[in-house]
Length: 464
Ligand SMILES: Cc1cc2nc3c(=O)[nH]c(=O)nc-3n(C[C@H](O)[C@H](O)[C@H](O)COP(=O)(O)OP(=O)(O)OC[C@H]3O[C@@H](n4cnc5c(N)ncnc54)[C@H](O)[C@@H]3O)c2cc1C
Image 1 (cartoon, helix red, strand yellow):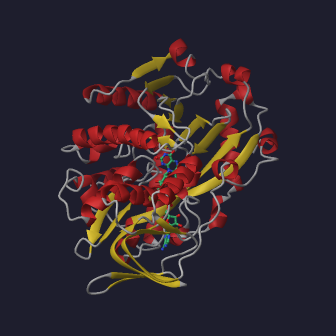
Image 2 (image 1 turned 90 degrees about the vertical axis):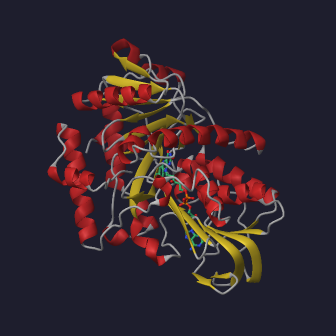
């Protein structure tokens, strides 16, 4: 542990930068007494909020209720990196590897979804610092560079615009002694996730959606002609229910072993000056990610801090959900050291905020949707670290399912086939630890070990 890394964390605020600088609006009242609704949405992150808004568009007169256990967006959504991908499949490679037959369609739908999301932001006047500024993927080892070349070829096959960068051309995009190649894709967006939550929430309220906070749904019971949700202080009779509860214990117990919590961490620097940004060759506003299995993601905030996150992906035994685990000093020190190694030009820059959040990791690294109770209950989960844009697509799919509609979305195998379940403990912890060790070994040597190859053969993956 270097003393300059420790020094850089001396005044760090232990809260998500986004939520600290753009706190959610005043809390909404909790749900009390008995009410009824045409549609109840459980969970007020990106998935729940999009579901409410898209439902309002489809059914202008419906009574729509959203129940959030805490405050909207204070879980994964408001803590995320804000990378808004032109993908619903956790990237092009993942689509081509896992769903080769529908990969082309998945890729096109992912790109159309980002366009539609941008149109919705305009239509609803949501001010979320959305910028379609591109993404730079960088590589440091020979096998990572080979991987970027392979990605370039995949992009070319799928008609996706990209530019391979080396030497002086790369330095013009990013000047770090660690990276020797890059692939720039112009079609990628960034946004401020806390503003996104706040604005989606505002739009919901303006459109007459009844939003209750501090109202955890404790149970969901199917009655003959309705569904009954208990919230502790009250209950809601619903014709239809959309579950947008992410990594939290599902109200459908059969879904609980389909995702595990992976804790992901990030830092933001103090605002950087134009000279400091020039020194690292990063003058434009694209986001960046490096290419290891244990990867970093970095982007600028509106006031030119660098958000630097990723690398450690922590799975706690027994899938423990604990806000206390979102502060992890050893990870923050590691991130600070890696930042200094990546940008020695910025070695005296201090970090303003340090936080963690929980990713709902599925064994297939993509979201999935489904319905039960004769299309009266729908769910979407398993976003695995890429849920900002996919949440909108998932919301539309849940509404298709609840309406009993057969659409291009509900027909997708990626969405309709549930991923492999995680085994019970202690096998789960042992399996995740072996996979993580294998991924770290592959990052160091370029060699994929026997355990990961066995998982590959069963279509099982691990990512954050
Ligand atoms: C640190 C971090 C960085 C990330 N970076 C990115 C990124 O750059 N790009 C990207 O695309 N994705 C990223 N992600 C993933 C992305 O944030 C998520 O996929 C997305 O926000 C999921 O939205 P959600 O609505 O499903 O979940 P959440 O935001 O977790 O919302 C679920 C809500 O449901 C509520 N809830 C749960 N159970 C109940 C109940 N029984 N009753 C009532 N309410 C309930 C919870 O309180 C919570 O508010 C990141 C995630 C993390 C943690």
